[in-house]
Image (tube, helix red, strand yellow):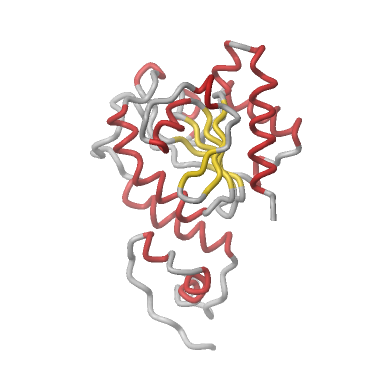
Length: 231
């Protein structure tokens, strides 16, 4: 039996991001529940561990200052924690609130069809929302709600470290840029946020109401995917 390392104390997410080498070194010091020999985690497993640590304080979030009164649960995100491409929507809807996963309703079904059309596997990207609780009556998130949710979103981005981000809808983009924007003018334009390329796109819900804009959404998602897979 190899040496058993002591459990490390929980520390803030940002402390893990000194360097990739440091990240992997710390991964070797984490005890496994089985108490077997520690092993070298791959990036996906380790990033999932970091996300779980980030989420833990919010799992019993009945008293959270940013919880919506009509929401039943928090919706963190779904997908590959080591994804090269990250999608950020606005907020969960009814179906997302019930299932605890983002983009599983009509908008999510449309997004899945677009992924299939352009050759994206949903399992290989990470999808989340800028606001993690369903707003009342599916209304647009308020600025103060977006602001309250930013630490959690930014923590996700720091852990996942995507090579590109595609924002879906104006609220997600405004949350990153911290200013009001018109998505009709901004969609498809490459922006840089914290050294990460960002491609703004229409929200799939908007496309359901305005089908003529579907080619624009497909094109913008394709652009984001291309950026994410550049060497």
